[in-house]
Length: 51
Image (cartoon, rainbow, N blue to C red; front, side):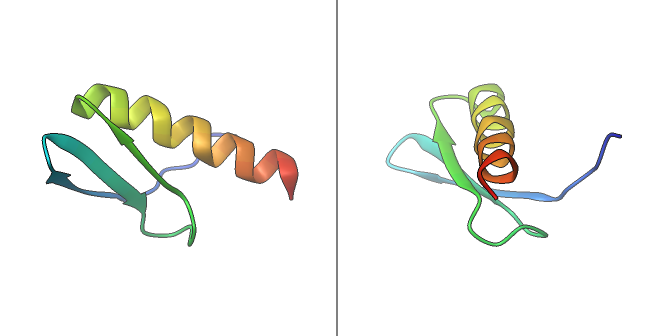
């Protein structure tokens, strides 16, 4: 089952920083927007595997 979430992101000191709006506590960063998207997926996967 595939879910869709809203990624809110901003640039801080040349890094893309973001969070999932629907999932409190899932934050990540990346040097590019693509890297941020990959990292936020990893953070979400880790969170659901540990819960």
